[in-house]
Length: 439
Image 1 (cartoon, rainbow, N blue to C red):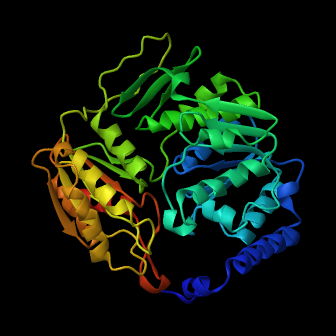
Image 2 (image 1 turned 90 degrees about the horizontal axis):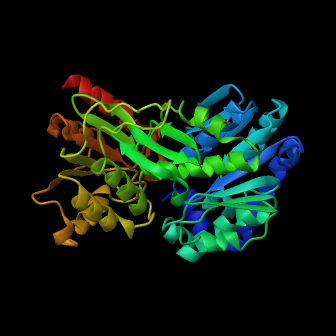
Image 3 (image 1 turned 90 degrees about the vertical axis):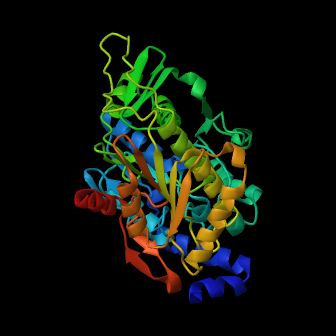
């Protein structure tokens, strides 16, 4: 355990809150309160999953509409035409970094700033001294339960963003927690639901759906990306941007790093995704297990997303682990249960152990394999390989033509966190590419 983590256990919570607030105030003062600049409209996006993808979608739409945009997410930072990777191993930057980023956006005369807002960031006052024009809620499920002391506390931190944003609230009405966000007053409330999307089709290489009379074709896998698209389209609606601009922007999406990122199409399909909660993992497995094929749109002038080969009737081979450091231990056997339910070959491996014993983490994931044996794929196999690089290589070697290898947990993260606060350079995607070349 690091000195910082030890100190947190003994310092009273009210002092920690005061410490974080003071740092945020100091950052705002030093940077000249950029979060209150009247020429910058700030959009905060929060939820358990889909935040980074939604931010990318919103950014593309606003740029397509002719605006200059700044954004940060767990994937990247962007100010106008400049962008760089988020290598902080932190979704929402620290208090001083947030204020410096906003100052840079103001100096570059950006008209919008889109920020990924986390519960931990809110708890540490990183959202303070920022005039949010719009707050967006993507979804909510169990995460950071130990850290927040319960799901209700986790949800309450998310709600604080909406209490800060007085103008526009955009809410996923399909999520069971939507009512808590809708209860908070705002000048303009917009909801979205999967029912808003018609003629939904999923292919091996993307999703197609229709909103009103506009047909969307997005080259990203997973039905959950329809929700991300709907959230972004609602932001566009709030700022009077029409659907045709949204369509043009979203069809240009090439992929989001580490989010259902296709590493290889042939001889086997290899995908890397950030999924690390049960809901995220099941959504990913379902997306890869239930793709329809050979869809041809009947709408005039529509563009078909090409299918390279069918996913149906192929084997799903997965590589998964679970984060250490005491983070959400409850979910480890659940992740194992889901892998056993959907995957034919399973390799449990190391992820970000922090100060925990990685062998014990893998053992806890393994416990899920004895749950609900009736729901498991017949004759599915699993093994434990501590070395994550070796695990990825083994999964790819096991794959046959038409099989799908899905590597989850880290996405595009550039580090693996180990004991004593150390980080080692890491990239699941590059390891997969190298393994494929050596076959």
